[in-house]
Structure formats: C-alpha cells, structure tokens
Image: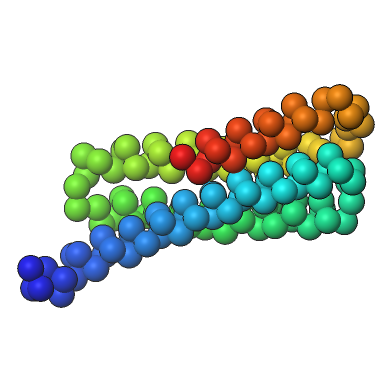
Length: 137
C-alpha cells in the first residue's frame, strides 16, 4: 500500500480532496460569520462591526468561488471516477448558491437597513441559527 501513496495519480486526488475540504471550511466559516453579523445587526444596526462581518463573508465568498473554479477544473481534467463528477459538481454548485445567499442577505441588510422591532428579533436570530446549523451539516 505504501507504493500507492507515491503514484502521481493519487496525489492529484489528495489535492482535490484538500481543495474540497478548504471549500467546505470556507462555507462553514461564512455561516458562522453570517450568524455573528445578524446578531450584530439586531443589536447595533448597520454598525462598523456589522460592515466588517459583511465584508468578511464577501471575501470568503470570493475565495470560495476561486476554489470552486479550481475544483471544477480538476474534476473535468483529472477525475479518476467520471461517474461521480456530476454529483460532486452538483453539490459544489448548490453550496455555492447557498454561500451567495448568505452574502446577499447581509448586503440586503446593509442596503435596506430594515428597522426590526424588538419582538421579531428572536425570530431573526433563530433563522440565522438554523441557517448555520444547515451549513454545518
């Protein structure tokens, strides 16, 4: 089995696995930043802290897009098991859409600056918590 570790074809697979793991880490971190940004908005409105978190999610989304393109490129050019390529690509595209929705929601808060009555803030926080739980699963 030690021989298999030195075969170049398996190195490419490990590289792809690392990129997918990094992509998933960025998604998870973006979910946590989203939750903190919503908490900050509910507590302090469109404050500099909220803007910082929104910008961090924005950067995470951009970084994740670069990773997604690299993953897609590797899947098309170097995939060992072409039958699973569509499944992986579909999952990555769906996750990218989710990441875009997190970013878009924070931009909507920033642009629209909704005044959320105190009695509804718990519902917003619950929704943010649910989003983070879904992202982490």
